[in-house]
Image (cartoon, rainbow, N blue to C red; front, side, top):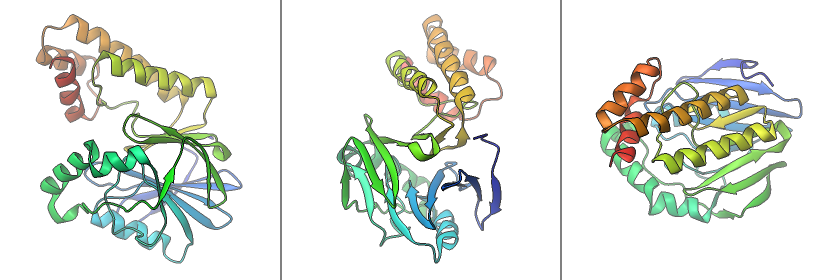
Length: 263
């Protein structure tokens, strides 16, 4: 599947990109919200499963309108646990560590920060998870998902469309990299994607990407480690990264990365 081979549907907020795999359709929602969130809908035989939740009131209203009259069998809530006003009656699925991340850990801290920054535009209510997922296969709405726990929450393989979902990739934007060890872990994960040959890599802050993008990100992470090893402080590190990657977005993520490498 070519990552550019989709139908575009404009919504009241953001737009939907619909990929047709035959038996399954992927609806990739670009919310257009301040965090550039992406939400994915898997459609099979006219029924839907939602992967992640929109968290801003405008995108919640837009996606709710898009799904009006369509049966939704479940929602997988991994890294974005806020937005509880979205489809409140639909069953919610998550791993135990993802629930803890949202209710007690780093996810809770982020929700508090976003609520303070965006006020009423951000829905800080947390989805109530009624179904705990374990590592391995899980079938929801007639679609098989393969759950992989991560340090914070969980990633999802979708075998029927040869795709995988993870929190972040972004081949032409900076990422939060918590030091050289974390970079190595990200590289290993992306090399695993290359080995498995996924058609699409889905992330909650970017449009669907492909294996070429994964290779670009690996090269970026390797270079990031080299730059950090050659710099005396965070400011020099950031200046060199921006010199080499002038068109990259996500400068706030680069600031956080510098803080990790030069604590």
